[in-house]
Image (cartoon, rainbow, N blue to C red; front, side, top):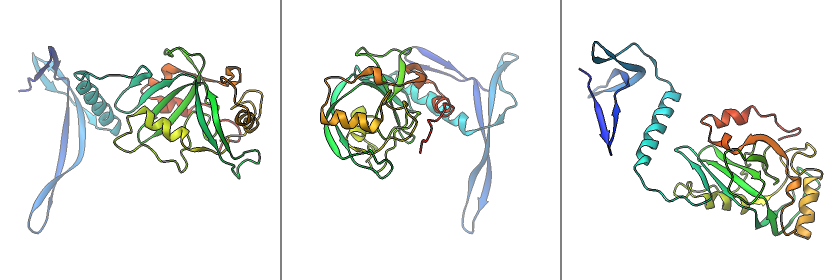
Length: 264
């Protein structure tokens, strides 16, 4: 008879589903073992006052991901964590954080992809940025206006830097990604981004990276004579708000956005 209840820290969890594993015995010359050939997932529902497993369906990889995420989040509920003021959201598969406008060292290197690119470096103004790191799936960065901590409704803009695609993903190139120990440290991702060379725009569409000016020309002027703050009127709006980055299917949402012309 199935009758399982789990109690933890004053909360209770009732049995609501089951996974059944189907195995096949593999025999060798001296031993044999069992291998799982497939699995099914079922709802557990009360029938005549008793919980029973009802017919189910094949278990999918998406089911496993949802279960793993739920367990991870449940385990973290009981932990006390200190979040930096810049941290906007964190889950088992991503973290989203914000950095206010700042002066940062930027390094540029001429590229054969664009004749207007150049070599140079300087401490330049950068706009407020919202970062999304998904270990194993890459780094995404977007610009945001203002100096206040963003809300879920805050409008996102194209990050006005070379090496960033139109959907926000960063082209890492030969840069070193954070190691296993540091992959949940925002500063490690920022170091990867700003510690590498900006080589070229990742697309050719006019007014898509820097509004009203060729991006290589804009940054070359900024390198020669850095402004005190980044001109926010040059930011290009994209059809996203900060809250979209915490959507469970954020990558699907990003993948349907139109790609800029000439993106490579």
